[in-house]
Length: 165
Image (cartoon, rainbow, N blue to C red; front, side):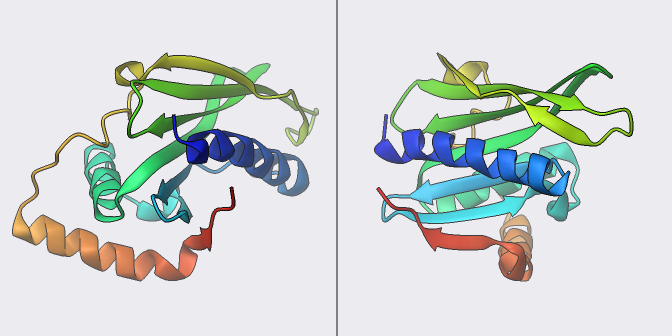
């Protein structure tokens, strides 16, 4: 597993803790890191796409930026009293992925007030719903152009930085 994957798991844990407890929001996020350490992070909801198109777009981005690791996270609601923030980090060169989960506690006004530590588990990459983004994707020329345009439109909303080791 790349060191970027391990660092990404720690970073996303902190990112979610700050967003949830500091700002009261739990967005669906996607981030990737390429071999040079460039990291791109954005909110999946900003895509405003159907799930199938969203998966194709994310696979396109993973391939275009030669990602060595990517992560995707969201809020999982089991019932009103059981809510979890979960994300998975998928490494290009490993059949295992890191899945992290933390339980979210809300007050009577539905504001987040507590988040347990993220528990890390290694699972088979192919057992994750979105663990296939490294698989080759065949897109029409029109779809490729649409995705290129969407990426350009999204650039102002994308956090881009060099990930430190």
